[in-house]
Image 1 (cartoon, each protein chain N blue to C red):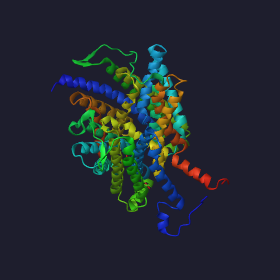
Image 2: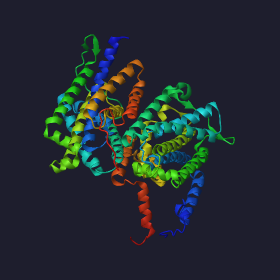
Image 3: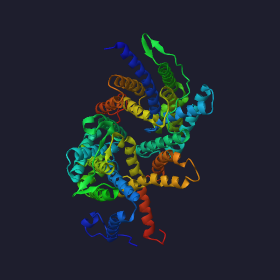
Image 4: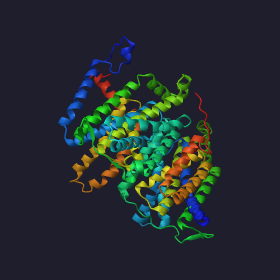
Length: 347
Length: 292
């Protein structure tokens, strides 16, 4: 087993992939992702798309909450802004998918920056509550700006089409959603090798110290809000293409809590954590659903308890991880790797 | 302008505001004593309503016994929550604790749904129902009763805080934990006490809310308005919670009556945003100065 890397240059120290093992791992991962839709059944491809959308959005929230230390409960509302933008452009302008997604991201980014403006004066919990206010107000806009958002009935949009190919079923959308999500994760991973990303981390660790070090707080906090909302907006756009119906109820406050839970469970301030958390939190309800399927012959009312049990498990996961594993799944993963580094010898 | 209508709406708003104020006090109590921002406050209210339903309708206890039993169980729940969930998080980042209470809220909603189902329930009638007139203005008797109860609870609470030994210990702990320790106050016990009292108050408010509008697993959304109340009033100010509670109640009633029901959350949260922009620490909150 590899136990360390000898780095002989700063470039090597800063590289995204530190050694050949990681490069190999990445190639294997990409191969698996490319082969997955040919092997898995339709339902599993559907789930994979959902997971990819959630990974993209959770990564965005991780930039803001995990790396910049600004708690936001508005991620779902920003996704809504992106989804509505994409749906509206697809219906009324018929512009290409890539343009729509970027426009959705940019619109959400602008809204996110507007929401982030109080972040200089308002910190911590007050900010979290300000973002709840933003999501309530955005929900109101979705519901009542009927001429654009279609009111409570929402917008129904045609299927996406890329190069003349209709992307209608999950097996086709997979090729749109998963590459975009991968690109976004890659972008986030690279962000923290740049000045901007490092500034975010400095702000998270102590914002006053960061300001003393010459980081303009307002500008970087707003950049962080903008980037995170951009991610949410693009993820929301993908969501819109995936479900093809966007209504005000599609993006409730619970969904923002879901993303916050995903990065808590995964591990805040770690790109891997955001991914693991989003995958885990998306799949837990599915596992519960399967468990109910198995239990149905034994317990006749198993289906009825599914929804409350799901709510309890969701809360218990947040509570349990915060108390017992505050670093999240990413830390468990690191611990496993450390164990196998020297395996079969004990440290 | 129809003054009679305005008065009636304002009176209804005042009644709602009384409930907000009581729930806000429960929130502020926990925040002052333990520095925990309890986002599960709405769910604790909901729990109170359901407990009353369980005792009064499920076990068919007389109403006064059901109320007492529900308050007792709610207090016990507060104690358990503090010991099991909040105590291990002592000294952790406040944001982690804040998220923990979000998780707690989710657990409470799930448990309630598991026991009583997801459908809205009507609580057994335990408040007078005859219409009440103040001058010419009509007030629903339930709202008037709950306002009266709210006023009594607030007054009792202020007296307790001022004169009772435990209340003094609470205030001492809120002012300075280390100093409270050094004069012999059992600070962890004060934390438990704060949670127990807050849960009892919240459960009481929840019964009143449930008696007016029924209970359902979504009653916890009431907590969002309570959140507005405490932020507007200042997280650590009891007086702020009372003033802001009544303010929010009035604004919600006016927005609902003159603009339409869907404008209620918009109005309250706009108030929240305005207050945050002008006074980020609330109307009566302490402005904490941060040092490196």
